Every structure is written in C-alpha cells, then in structure tokens.
Length: 153
Image (cartoon, rainbow, N blue to C red; front, top):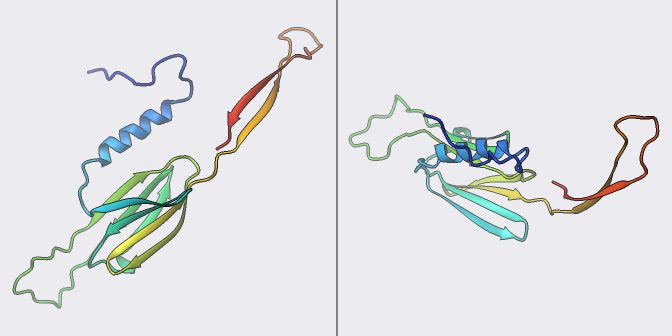
C-alpha cells in the first residue's frame, strides 16, 4: 500500500522533516501514562508537568535528541519488601514531546510527585539578506542582486 505524502508538492522544498515529525507524533499519541500538563508561563516560556508520584530523582531521566524531548521513568522492585496487597504498580514509562526548532530546555525540577520541565522559545528575528546573481557563462558577474526576507531560527 502506497502512502500519500502531505508534502509532495514541488513548491514545498525541504519540508520532508515535517513529515517525519508528524509520523513521530502519531506514534507517540497513544501514550496515556503518566498524565501531563503543558502551560505557558511567560511570553516565550512553556512548562511541561508530569505526574510521577512514587518516582525519585534516580528513577527519572530526561534526554533531548533530534528535537525530541524524552522523559523516562524506571522503578525497581525491592525484593526485601513483602506486599500483602499491591495496588500501586511499579511501572515504567516513556513520554516523548517533539520540540520546535530552537526551543531549549532550561530547567527540570521534581516536587511532591510532579516533574516540571521548563522550556524557552527563542524570539524570532526577521533577517533580510541579499543574494548575488552571477552569469552561468563568462567571467563577469552581474551586478543585479535579489533581496530575500527570511526568518532566522
């Protein structure tokens, strides 16, 4: 079965990484544990808060790779404990978030079973640059220039 690409237009050059990002989001969308909130805490700041009751600092790990923030939790069973009833499972989790280009993780804190990860979004700066145009054949370059308005990342 052939999959139709959303970005197969010849006018959308260099957008293939968006398609890969959408695939990653679709795969991680089925995760339900642990529950989390995403809030805006400033004009250019965000906070992801995960409910990780029962997890300590040594049980949690945060990694960033290829614009993907991954938070993992691993609890180990303590063999010396004898449970008469066990209603709280020692379960592992992995929660992933795809980050926009340039977003940086600034801090992570664990307080009362809530893991908070703060993110900073860089301010967009409009940049205008001139691209020189040269002749395909010949020694002399054309003095004509093209101005391109581009958003910096």
